[in-house]
Image 1 (cartoon, rainbow, N blue to C red):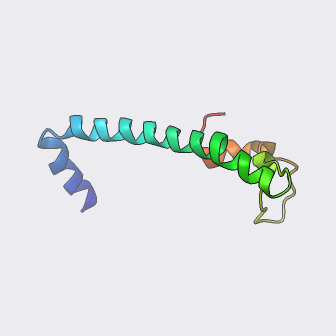
Image 2 (cartoon, rainbow, N blue to C red):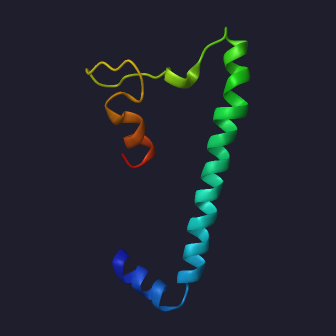
Length: 82
């Protein structure tokens, strides 16, 4: 059903609108991530006692990781290629 609705949408010529929406969404994602990581979190870290949020995380399984980058977790969470 969803695939049929998508086909109808694609046939109507709205592919350009869809592509523009994806590009704008990707750009907005980059702006928000940059704002949070570079502007918002450093002052919060200073206010709560010079906490570095770069490798601060809550592990929800039994495996132990020293950093988020260990075992490619950060790549899998963000969808970045290996």
